[in-house]
Length: 388
Image (cartoon, rainbow, N blue to C red):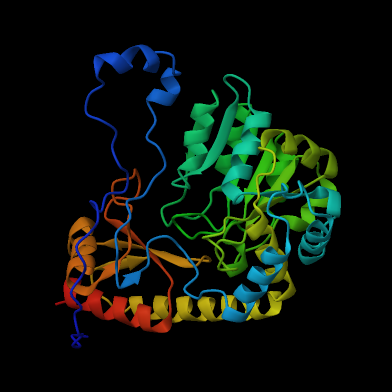
């Protein structure tokens, strides 16, 4: 498959293409007294961050490849222009909560909105965890769970996924019971592996542990079972959703939590007041009114993903893992992942996510699903790099 590909000149990165931006090499004496007041558990953590680099094809943050249609944007602008900017936004706009409840099949007073679902991860853990409380989560998974657990004074216990990054539900439950877990986090589809929980897994964790189960479904629009139907049966379940992925609103930051109304009331104590701004609230309402249009785009992304996966199978030196999300994890055998990452960017202008520095992800890259043209370019670039 050595097909020619026009190779664009990649722009010069604004900063290094590193997964994390390291802190200062040393602490000046005048800062040491202040930093001594920070918890050691916090000082030992690396902030969640990602270097920003321009690219012709940006496939490193699992974003929707399609912007909101211009007519929807104009509707948002019109609504915001008509609103009083000198007033605080509503804590929980009743009309929006009602639309969200109807969209997800839940009750109005069991919906909590946030500045992205990440804020609601933090809110859930902050109201649940006291010093030393245990959080159990799969590994590898979204690094923010470990970071927040440690910052909040909890103890994080990671449970390895299977050899193909499939969920080991028995081992998760055994670990949660043994460690007397306060919270079990289930990210499905899981980031960065794309693996989805098997049907009935959340129900089992609820039945066989006494933990609060945080079901992070940021990518569920693209595949895998949802835990939402279980909400009416357990007050220990919190389901998170986001408009950053399938809805194409990553730049506006809107997420929500679905929980038993009594639990939602407690979760609200862990978030900041007026946490969702006027523009985002307007955009979320308009997105819901056009949810059929946005759902059609999601189906197209799934189709592009499946075609991409089928073509990846023909690229020598690449192992791919099943994905129910809008990204695909690959393992590079022919060349080191960092070299493949660098050459994709330098020679082809394609920016993916290098996750090879993380435990259990040696020689792995994560590739977001973009347009059909984007994925054709990735296949041809990989063919030129690793299969030549």
